[in-house]
Length: 258
Image 1 (tube, rainbow, N blue to C red):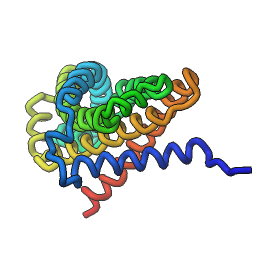
Image 2: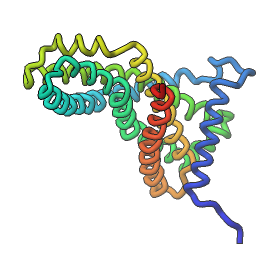
Image 3: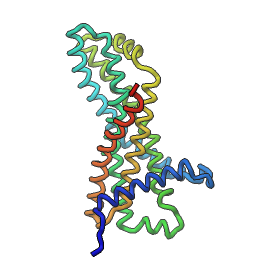
Image 4: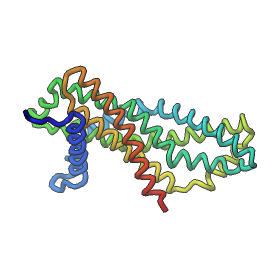
């Protein structure tokens, strides 16, 4: 009897190979110019799709997370007379961790699942094979535009959501706890550095790449018809969420282990 590896194992291996393939084509393939390697039309279409689909949910989620943290910080720090550091702590928490992770989670649920379902449907209906017959590379046409679109869109979404969460925190701190907006803004300006925004952007780029590669990998390895598409969609979101926190830990160790 021929041994067959578990489905999860070979699909994970295929996704890792796809990630290496994408990196090679984008960064290391010297024989073809970058413009020819990237399908700009598909990339722009994916960016136009990902941004509007995710922005509203990301902003709303960031706002309420900001409100919750403002309640906790204002309540506790007011007891010990440290209202003047609330803005700085909120800014650091949002920029370094909360905003990129929250936006990545929203992107995984909103866009990653759609990518996995779309590519999974194309795989089970043999549309991917038809692209190969038409002399179109599926990785160049389907995968790389989605990876680039997520890598470009997520940092922008994070910056907008960061501003939204800080604005929500300022409003609640002023109306509910009597902390002046000037105090929060001055504190944030004092503690926040440009490198913190850079860390947020770097994490967002990494999260976007991870989500897109996992979603494309599980989508393009779908088997089993409609049931397989549903399984791929669910699995891609779950694995993306776990990968986000793993990558977040690794990047935090790299950026802040001093």
